Amino acid sequence: MKDLFSYLKSKTFFKHLALATVSLVIVLWALFKLLGVYTHHGETAEVPDFKGKAIAELDNFVKDKNVGYTIIDSVYSPEEKPGIVIKQDPEAKSMVKHNRIIYLYVTSTQAPQMAMPKLVDRSTRQAVFMIESYGLKVGKITEIAGDCKGCVLKQYFNGKEIMPGDAIKKGSKIDLSVGKKEEDYSAMSTDSTAVADPEDEE
Image (cartoon, rainbow, N blue to C red; front, side):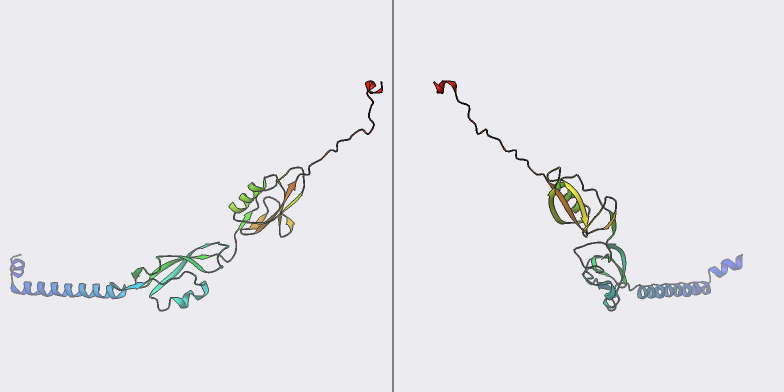
């Protein structure tokens, strides 16, 4: 035990301790330096504008941009061309770390299916509102003779009658046949023979 305490107080021990401490500091510094190089610490890249780019051209588009990408969702938009980027996160021109993944939202190449709503017996205004709220389009509205004026009698898709609950793609155009009530006019009959007033005969 005395020898141990004597060694701990010796110059040799402090010399070895100093060497071990310096070595540890150098190793830790080298590790942090390598980690910074691996993660590109302090290096940033400007996020490119992906909007409007087709899915097929994304790989070539990001080759020299120092960022990556992943498609996380597809959205059906009848106003947009299918298969293009419509939204990204982070936004274009943001500054991010090298090799940052950019999340993309693209337009769906196919319209989703939905159940056809029941428009028959509703007013024209109600039917038009339902068509638009369901993501469909209003087609031709034709008036035909019917029991009610302004109410929907039949609903059509591509020239064929479509029943409520039938599968149909969003964005499809729906035609309507609307009732046009005929007004009856009863002709008033007039008697051509006049009855003489007895006083006039006198």
